Amino acid sequence: MATEVKVPVLPESVSDATIATWHKKPGDAVKRDENLVDLETDKVVLEVPAPADGVLKEIKFDTGATVTSQQVLAILEEGAAAAAAPAAKPAEPAKAEAPKAAAAPAPAPAKSADLSPAGQRVATENKLDPSQVAGTGRDGRVTKEDLVNFMRSGSPAATPAPAAPAAKPTPGARPEERVAMTRMRAKIAERLMQSKNSIAMLTSFNEINLAKVSAMRKELGEPFEKANGIKLGFMSFFVKAACEALKRHPIINASVDGSDIIYHGYQDISVAVSTDKGLVTPVLRDAQNMSFAEIEKAIATYAKKAREGGLTLDDLQGGTFTITNGGTFGSLFSTPIVNPPQSAILGMHTIKERAIVENGQVVAAPMMYVAISYDHRIIDGKDAVLFLVDIKNQLENPHKMLLGL
Image (cartoon, rainbow, N blue to C red; front, side, top):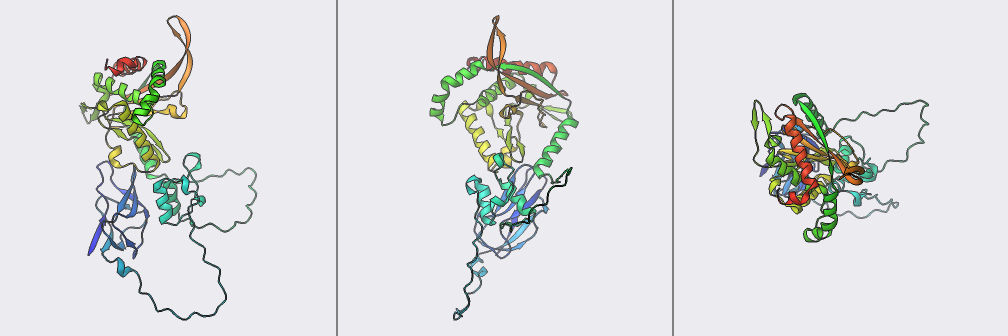
């Protein structure tokens, strides 16, 4: 029985997808739930599994083609796996001949220990040697996207023959390389321009003394980790403070829809996570109801999924307010850009010990600059400043924050 393999139903925010990699070719036997093809969208890479055991009879679109929701990608012949293998021929008498060199085995991934599970699968299924792929990940690691782009470029996976000695570079040469944007990078660029051109964006700043939060982490960090299996970070304090401040300043949590303002009676906090392909913002849904441990665990899970290319579209949909932490990379000061249709974003930065005046005395304190960028069409400067002061007061008095004061 022939079965159609279709593009999964895409959400309204994703109009189409690009075929990144076919893991099977016509005539190949497949098993139920085995990944047939990777589809690259503006946000994530989707895997399309086989709906049943059988043989891949026909592929409708080649690699690089653009497809839309529910389009037929391929035809699968169910239960035909046995017929796919050719009948064995009778053995012929052996003929005397000169010994031949043993065939070289398919190259095994040379960096398998450094690959994510998704990258390992791509390398194994396509007999790729990661040592021949230029890595764009942290510390030069090869990512799943690097392997996919390597195949899409038509580069051979086998180890190349020794190249002739490279010619000496011409004095004064100015090398350039033109590389097409990935769909995710192109979408990020589009949304940044949309934010710049459609929002009357303004940014306000403040600074926070994190001495008491640091002392609390030092005192309670070890028992917290033993009890919950996760470290107590700064981000959970900022998420909790943001949720409380958003309750008191609901316009910061609102969004614009045409000529209407939509007030959200919940706090779905988008947390910016850096990946090799760009920044993504998975959502902590109903963050106002989450404990510190639940927030830390959710963020750790999202970070792991982002590194391994495992984020789903559901992970990235929605969000009423965003928190981004440029301090992870050492940023001291920045103006974050609002993520439409949200109306505001909180920017965290690196913590620096600085001299401040406290009770008439000059003391050293762990200080952080914070910023709020907001849509001035619906948020007045007063509301943005008061919101940021609310965040500051909570984090400088974390015992009150824990009591919801």
